[in-house]
Image 1 (cartoon, rainbow, N blue to C red):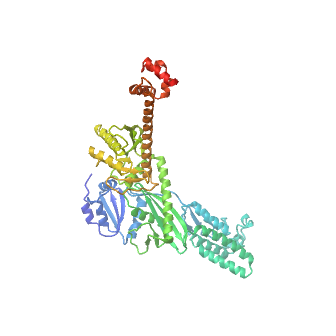
Image 2: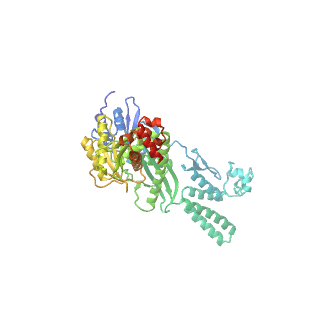
Image 3: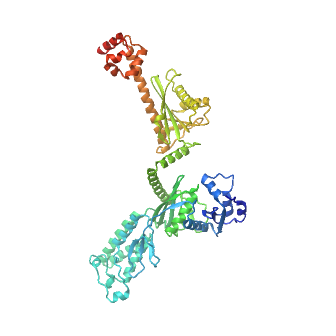
Length: 598
């Protein structure tokens, strides 16, 4: 592969806004980007001191030619980049996943226009409203129009000449009151066009203007004692006001505004768009973006805004966003609201995008469970400030009964799931009496001394069930073994689910609903269960041994042998003389028999 002299290429690139394109050795376009300053932006890719992710390094290694297009403003670069990406779909650009054909509401260009929905846009002079990402919303609007206005549904060519020549007769729709019969001049074109004008205003989100005009008609009709007309328009008014109460979500003073929000992770980003006109949300959609490089939320949001404004023919001068966007354009104003109605709109958009993200990721994770594992482990690494992904986690817990029968248990999670074959328990050997700290120190030391001796891989994360004392004891053992810098160890205190780090007196609190905390709680609870089970077994055996040792001729050693073979006192009692004779002499068998008969 021939080397690429990027310094020579940079010398020809100006300090101006524009779009740059990267080509590989075969002349294939592999990446398109925009910049306020082309030379600085392109040069940043080849800056050895700049930390870039693995995908970006691969992209840079493939670049063999750079071309660029200078534009007047940053907004022009923004639009040109979006159009070129759509056209060429380069390998390393993000992928906008939106393969649906959304429906439109059409006001057909014809005499006495029909209104209906369609998925095909034909450039015949008709007026289109949409597209509607929510088909339900579209049908709600069409139902409102049908309930409020009597329009024709036939496809007859209702030209003035045809009507005057009497070519048509009214149909059943006229008979049942769904049409006023323009085909036979029963409805004038002026009256029909007035209906179309009001419907156009509603579809443009200006329902308030229509309601105001209808109120004027009701008032004038009442004053003129035209009660039939007043009643007809009063019914229309009630329908319009009912629809307005459902569709208006903010102050109607917010006349023409776009709202966008984003939620992302390592692989995907999801962007929600709301188009608000006169206080009503008239369009909404959420799209998914598959990341190709380490794109920032700002870059992704900028691309999505272009996509939405083009698709929904937005002309709004204001865009409500969750954070500042460094895009300079005198015709656009980006607002990051802190309070009020605009803040509520942003929160509504964020609620939608988070729901969409959760649903989509759930779908993907059902199809590929490894995605969920990777996501949870990445989130744990981020939440717990780890230097490594915690694929191997171990958790310690101690149990004792009034200072007797002390045991330690360790449970192991690999890839966020229990690895039960790796669970271990320890009989405490060096600790006398109820000393939880010393017991923890012994268990941790013995566990990792053996792992080092057997050259087993150490865990990335160790969790100690307990507060600062138990954590300090565990750290002491890790230091003795010289591995305290190789693994991360944290303690979890039960009462408030506080997480403690060595040397830090202040605890870390995680969101009670976070998956990271749930995994830690699951580890802690599993270690407690496993430890308690072993502790009870040991305690029960201790109690049974004491009971057997009361029998004349049965000492500690013999009691141990009986319990190892028969497991319980009940089975010893039910054992035959032949079975007992394998361990006991005749005198001991007789004493055992007399004891159980008593």
